[in-house]
Image (cartoon, rainbow, N blue to C red; front, top):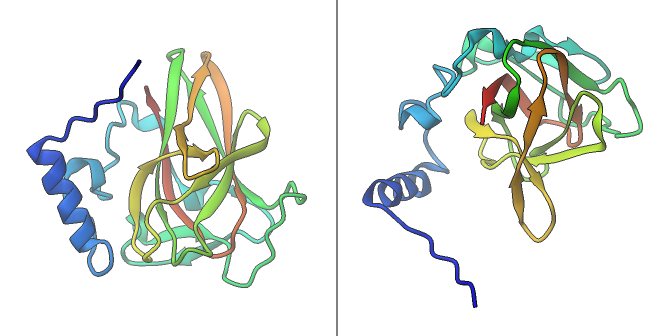
Length: 190
């Protein structure tokens, strides 16, 4: 019979405790390299980093100003906007030129004001057709660095890892819930 063992180190316990204490009242900037939004963690190729406001916006997506966002701005759909997966134009689109073929993951810096404004649908090169359901992990109105996961039900999350060939690729974030915001995205080798 197989068993699952989860090792907890003092560092991960300390980080977990810090996140629990900090989640409702403070910024996570500077907590660690992994969570520091001032740099793009793990980005080995700066050409694979995009500021969200530089993406091609359509539908309800707009640029919002915020001094906590890198560069002072991010994109979002305003609270009260209509988000519909039936509207193929209700998205922000990013183009990338990949020089090294391999498996990639998508890192974001995003913001969710609350539990009703905390998700996007994400597609890479038009797939999957219904999009990966990306639920933002922090719902307290602070910018937070995260890897895109696909919610598969019952609070199960699966890391999105995409095999990419050399050449042009497109990553799209579709409006799912108004108010969710995106500061930047990066493709990283997995």
